[in-house]
Length: 134
Image (cartoon, rainbow, N blue to C red; front, side):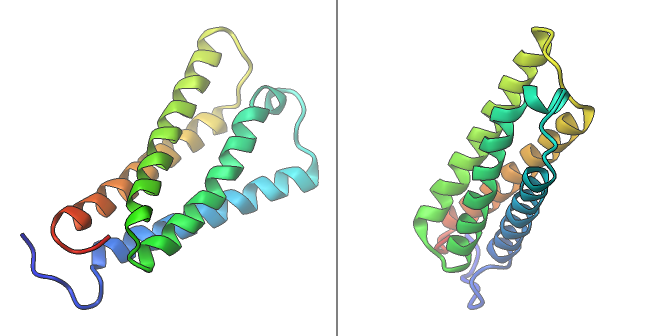
């Protein structure tokens, strides 16, 4: 078991910063897509994924703030976001296997989001389980 870090745990601070940054970038990207109106062709097929991703962006910002504030619910929130991201990626894969339209950048973005959400979840749980609050 690690000794308690008076600063609140470097790992949790890094995970929180990553969650906030990823969430803000996701919301910014989604907002720009809405303003520009890029929902034609390949984008239309992923419109549900787009709205889920936008909601996940807001959830990441809130979760990151919760991790910084050392709230226990933030660990669970990070877990839900990570699992939901994997589920959304799986749904996208199923859509593609069924012959649905997709953009290559959507696959790349989902891979990145999946890795980031898993890293945040693992960091939050490790700090929580090592005796420090999240």
